[in-house]
Every structure is written in C-alpha cells, then in structure tokens.
Image (tube, rainbow over all chains, first blue to last red; front, side):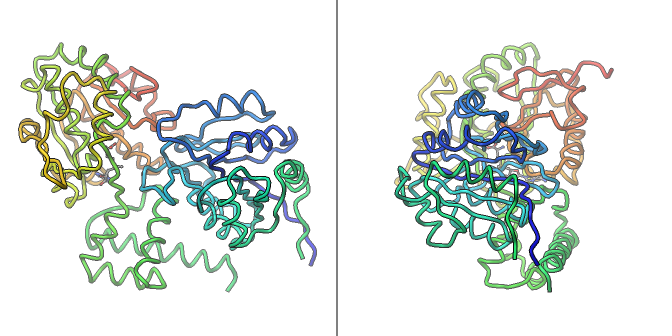
Amino acid sequence: MNTVKTYQALVIGVSAGGLAALKAVLPGLSARMDQPVIVVQHMSPDSDDFLVQYFDKLCSQSVKEAEDKLPICKGTIYFAPPNYHLLVEDDKSFALSTAERVQYSRPAIDVLFETAADVYKQGLVGVILTGANADGTKGVTAIRAKGGFTIAQSPKTAEAKTMPGSAIEAGVDMVLDLEEIAPFINRLMSKGAALD
Amino acid sequence: MTDNTLEENETIEMKLLLEAIHLKYGYNFKDYANAHTKRRLRNRLKMSGMTTYTDMMRRIIYDEPFFNELLMDLSINVTEMFRDPWFYLKVREELIPRLKTYSFIKVWHAGCSAGQEVYSMSILLEEEGMKKRSQVYATDFNELILEKAKAGIYPLDVMKTYTSNYQKAGGTGDFSDYYTADDKNVILKRGLREKVLFSSHNLVTDGVFGEMHLIFCRNVLIYFNRKLQNQVLQLFYDSLIPGGYLCLGSKESLKFTDFTDRFDVVSKKEKIYRKKLMAE
Ligand SMILES: C[S@@+](CC[C@H](N)C(=O)[O-])C[C@H]1O[C@@H](n2cnc3c(N)ncnc32)[C@H](O)[C@@H]1O
C-alpha cells in the first residue's frame, strides 16, 4: 500500500558548534510549516535566554523557551531551558525534570527524542546536528523504532563530528549537508513521505 | 501483535504496577507526570534484567529493597546548596526584610531531599539574624533521603559549586566556617540544625502543616500532573498564613494552575508568590 504519512512535529538535537548550525537551519524553515519544532541545544547550566531572543528575531515562527505543562502549539519553535531535561507528555504538553544528567548532559537530546517518539510515533522527524558527544544516538534509534523519520548532519559539514557520526553509525534515514537540511525539512513537512 | 496493542498492554501493566506500589507501600505515583514515570520505570526494568512490568510488579511486592531502589528512581533527589543563587539573593534582599516584621516565623521546606536547601536557608537566616526567631520544618516522603538530610554530610567534590553558589547568593561570611572536612566529605556544623525539625511527609496523602510564613517547594511540582499540582497547591494555600510566601523552583509557576488569582507575584523570575490577605 502506498499511503502518505504527514508529520506532526520536528525535534532537533545539537551541541558544540550549535549556534552556527541552528542559524543555518531554523531561519530557513518555511513560514508555511506549521508543525512545532522542539530543540535541545546543550549549554552551560547558568545560560540565560540568549538563544530564544536571538532566534526569535531571525525566524518566521515565534521562538519560546519550553515551560513545564505548556501545551505544545503549532507554528512555534521551542528551546529546552538550561539545566532541565525536556520531556513530551501524552497530551502534547511539556514536562521538565531535574533528574541526573544523561550522556553528561542536561538537557539531554535522548530524553526529548525518546519521550517525543512515544507520543508522536511515526509522526515525528528527528534531526541530529553538530556535537562532540554521543547524546541523541539512543534518541534517533527510538524515533526509528516507532516509525518516525531521522536525519543527521553530514559529519564533513559539522563543526564537531562525533554526535552526528554516532547517530549515523546507529542508523538514520538520511544524511544531509548542513545547507540541505532546511529545504529538505520544508518539503518533508509539507508533503509527508511516501510509505510502502 | 501490532505496535498499538503492545503499547496499550504496556500501559495497562504500568498502571497495575503503580497500583501495586500504592497498595503495598502507600506511595501514590498515579498522578505524577506520566512521561517522567514511564522513563524511570523503563530504565529500572532494563537495568534489572527483567523483561515485563508484570515481572517487575511481582518483585516490587515481594522484595522491599528492590522497591526502595525504585523509590529512589521515582523521587529524583538531585539538589544542591544555594541552587539558583540569584533566587537566594532575592530571598535575602526582598523577602527577609518583609519577614523581619514578624516576631517569629515558621518555615516549611516541602520536598527537601538531602537537606541542601534547608541548610542554605539556615545559613541565610543566621546571617540575617533571624535564626533565633524561626522554626523550620523540613519534610520529604523518602525516608532514606531524609536520613541523609539529618546527617548533613556531603561529598567533598561538590563543595566548589556550593561555595561559589554561596558567594553569588550574597553570603556575608566565609562559607568554610559552616563545615568541617575530612578527606572525602564535608560535615555541616550541627548548629545549622538547631531550629530544624526533619520529618516524613507525603504531599500527596498527608495533611496540612499549619500557620506557615514561608513555604519552599522547589523542583517538586514539575514531577506532578496538573491535577496533582492543584491538589498540592491547595495544601500549601491552607498551610500558609494570609500574606505568607510560597517559593517555587525557577522553572515552575502558578501559570497553568487554579491558583493564579489567590496569590500575588512578589518576584516573577525567582518564582516567589504571596498568598493574598483576604479571599476575594
Ligand atoms: C528534585 S528534589 C528537590 C530538592 C530541593 N527542593 C531543591 O530544589 O533542590 C525533589 C524532592 O521531592 C521529593 N518528593 C517527590 N514527591 C514527593 C511527595 N509526594 N511528597 C514529599 N516529597 C516528595 C523527592 O523525594 C525529592 O527529594
């Protein structure tokens, strides 16, 4: 059978070198793309809301920090707050947690990706960008196990290659150069993907 | 079996497991944030080598030490002294002068974990000359963690963070005056415990703690679903004197609760609220 599945949400995980990478992706997302985008960027525990402010100016979607119990809205880009894990609840709202670090990180990409995969199942797209650790690898595996779609930045275009490299080794659906990612996502999110 | 049936069955098993914990040990986790509970149970299942939640449920019922481990997983005890130093700075500069207008104050730390928050506040009260005029209640539902809180012994390697937090929080003394150290641990001065009563209290099932001037409940409500958040906020509301203060964690707020109208915001960023003087 050849049905078309439409995606409901996009999650992005990024670490070292993230600012430049996100700048090459987020502002390129089409204003017509109305699925929520949820981003975990590793950062120091006492960071302020610089990223949120910065990308709110650059992006056509509105950019916010994810809050505990906040319902996840269309057309919005959310960032995980510093020093908290970000989880997605069954009713498509956020939950925060101060639990131990995962892969030396809080927020951890794995925590967001795994909980989002539980909720959005095959409706989820996950992207791993530049980074110098293995966070996100379990996450993309979880997304694929639920039938979602996963993308890794090609290590040759990544400032830090370990994180996308590790995800690719575990298996992703697509490896793309940095500048190809936004256009690809725009197509994917508007059309869905043909299933066989 | 399709993925959907599998998931449905797993959800049923998890519900039964939580029910078993409630029946056997009295802890009610049914209204905790679901994504969080699911994650913790899944991790414990993987680590334990068992394959189904039904097996794990049986083990929970028959093997109390195993349950105690799971309780640790579910209760998340991560904490530090002067966590969010800017919050404690605000308490010092904004709240303490207001509290000084009372001849005596009662403070409740709900969900105090291993005590770091309590001792931070003890230091602050002492430095502000309020210690003699205060009674502090420190509660948690996890008895194992309460024992650690009473002991006030922490690993040496966290002291660097604690010391820098203390300074950023406006500490007026020398932090090293508050503890003695051996080669592995620091032992907080016993005097810091003087006004503190540690006791077991479950926010889900236990009752009101009367006539508080100040309640700290930081980084606990995020683990509850909205229904339980409202229930516990009612408990705090009933335990506060009119005009009493409630301090939440830096990423918690009353925003998505039924209590926005019953408290005034004292400090938005620091999440300090004040119970309104009269019911409207
Ligand atoms: C993350 S710690 C917060 C410690 C401290 N307040 C802080 O902010 O650093 C959460 C604490 O809440 C406690 N807790 C969770 N559920 C509880 C309940 N139903 N009743 C009382 N304490 C609870 C846990 O045992 C844990 O020690």
